[in-house]
Length: 219
Length: 242
Ligand SMILES: Nc1ncnc2c1ncn2[C@@H]1O[C@H](COP(=O)(O)OP(=O)(O)OP(=O)(O)O)[C@@H](O)[C@H]1O
Ligand SMILES: [Mg+2]
Image 1 (cartoon, rainbow over the protein chains, first blue to last red):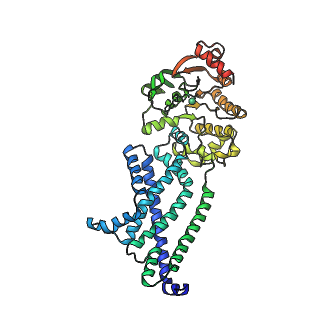
Image 2 (image 1 turned 180 degrees about the horizontal axis):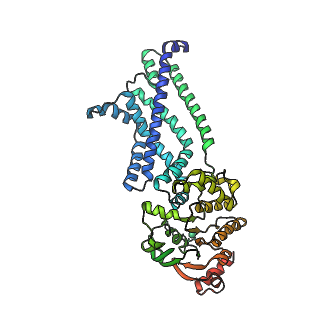
Image 3 (image 1 turned 120 degrees about the horizontal axis):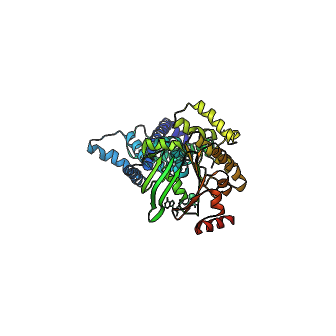
């Protein structure tokens, strides 16, 4: 199949698939950031059962195969009476896994702060919540920009697990499988998807570097 | 104003504070001196409960130091602390470092807090640096900002834990001068330092610590010229070498 044939037959589907990939990426990433922040706060809070729960969360979801989690949500949860649509399953899976990596990024950001600044804030009379908001979170966010940029790319690639469930519309990877079952597409359909993934990752990288340059903390 | 009674503390098996009794009156300047590892920092840090104690009592203005929560935070807000390593907030400007306490803890109006912060920065000689971040300042400048940050809370007493030990020699005096000024204005101060000139000029009392105990206390000139204990004599001999 030539490029021209590919686009005339599947061009519209590529556009939709790319949009689906982007949508799931953005929603998953935002969700993962929020969850990562909550998990991280639990991991540094003064209540030790909560700290252990946070650590446990990260250990579990950092070490689980993403695809098996998706299969559990999509194929096993209905037996428990929990039925989510395909896209929800993909997004929830991606959020849960990405949040564990996101929390690790925040933790290493926190570890660069050093106890000295925390002690200075405590001796000014700031409460735990104020120290989080004024000292810890802003610095953890700012020093996490580059690792979070990498995580965003990873999230985008993770949404390819959507190819394992009957998404409608399909995302980029699912579309390639579809094309190859409908017609003998050869390497070309893969190459187009790959190019879209790589091009987007490149733009994300540029944006991440630009943001990092602006917010990086001098030490 | 600050009183410690029979304070004991361990780090695991290490007995770092052994039956410490210390009284600092309003307006007094007390210097803690002693060999490395003798427990000076630990003692200083128990006063605003950055370190907890095993037993004994710490009284601030006659009231026991609160254990936790809002009351502890409120007491900490009244006691300034200056650290060896400055500990300025790395992501905030110099001005924001100084206004954070008043705005967040004392709920002061930001504009007023900024005006007062600028006044304090002028007083310690770093007003031109207000818009910079800490990493752009020299150590001596950072430490003066740290002092201004504490002063912005209008503390009733200030704790200094080796405020000049991390500084290059040429910057030590600019920080000591600010501290001398404070002492002369009647600030109640507990200062861990080996700066004999500071102790002689403005301190009312020197407390000599070794192995977690206060071994000797008294008038600074008397202590430096005629130490009573063998331990203090050895220690003074060793710091003269530097
Ligand atoms: N958090 C801690 N955990 C365990 N041991 C500690 C801790 N902090 C201090 N120590 C130990 O307690 C002893 C007293 O320490 P401290 O810092 O109070 O001494 P110092 O007199 O301030 O010494 P320096 O002049 O070196 O600052 C030392 O032996 C030190 O190693
Ligand atoms: Mg010390």
